[in-house]
Length: 369
Image (cartoon, rainbow, N blue to C red; front, side, top):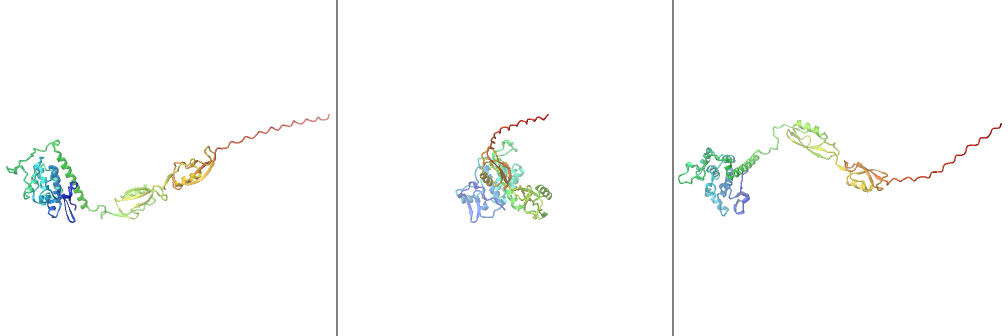
């Protein structure tokens, strides 16, 4: 069980703190009479501490002050807190009754728990609630003076505030909003802590939940795994991971491992292959063969085939690569390059030989007559 031990941390100083060997008590301005007396503390001690905080918000002062921590503790044990109505601000009598009951010296006269205190703070305008809150305070050995107008003696201080009814919202004093906000915040925090402590460990599956063995989804396409997981009532959390041995978009492994006992609603982490690790082909144009080879090694690639062709680029430099610059490839892939042989030479013109003269046709021999 968690108990609030200190509402004055932000303003605590060495002189205003009290401790017992091995036990933390808290700031003397905010702990309860039973804490000051070294008695057992309980939920009523938290109600007392919260009551002092609200008292200080409403009046601008703490109910007990002293030059030393011991002096403050003695006042708390021997004196009732001064009524809120003695301050400079007008405090409604029903609200004063709620706060003063939370500051009763006897823990039994305070509110039994935070829920009852919260209910009283939200309903202090109701006449029935006022009567219910004031009656225990009157019976608490005069720890808190009566506050109902028709029970106050003629010599008592007249009430400062007698509302005819709920005032318009625009007339509500500023301190009411601060009080409501602080009360909701503190009571909500106390309720949350109590629920967490009483609720135990909720991460463990219910004993009645049916368990089954997690299927083996290794190397299966993630699209198929999603369907199977949905049929089994399992929640998937997908995490991409490079793996050149497992096809892309297929399952590498699961957490928990295949065969583990799971139940409906459990979350399963699925590692999905995004293929092997990839890189981009670097710029090789203009480099020599050796420079291009070193660049490829630095990029975790391998120099492939090397060919040459005529080009206007300087001889011996890379004209282009295949795959081209900027192409995404797997780590370790080969990249082919083409080197320049320089400009293509212009062919030398050959001299034209003179034409061979055609011999004249032979003169025919006259036939004898």
